Image 1 (cartoon, rainbow, N blue to C red):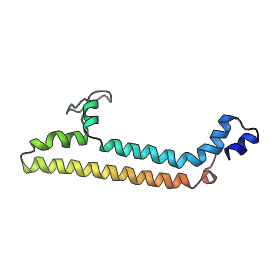
Image 2 (image 1 turned 180 degrees about the horizontal axis):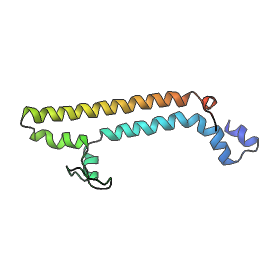
Image 3 (image 1 turned 120 degrees about the horizontal axis):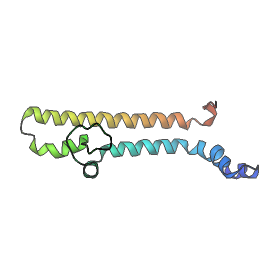
Length: 122
């Protein structure tokens, strides 16, 4: 279809927009959401990059603490049952968020994979 669009006189941008992107859209959306789900599961690399500061800050650019970082850093110090239960609950929350992101990615990939014919242009 790319060659057909070019043969009919479409520009490079028109060819990309009308012939290439509609068929690549499901793969692009799936890749974005799977990358996000994978980033949620990364632990130590994100812990070192984000600052590893266990405080709630008002700014998005301030150092922070992620759920995997909490589990990795605090598990060795979990002495009581309540402390251990809180870390297990944090792991459960992380699991639910990851499963939800993967389910959303599958839903969006299916919806986008139906094709450009079902997408209304305004």
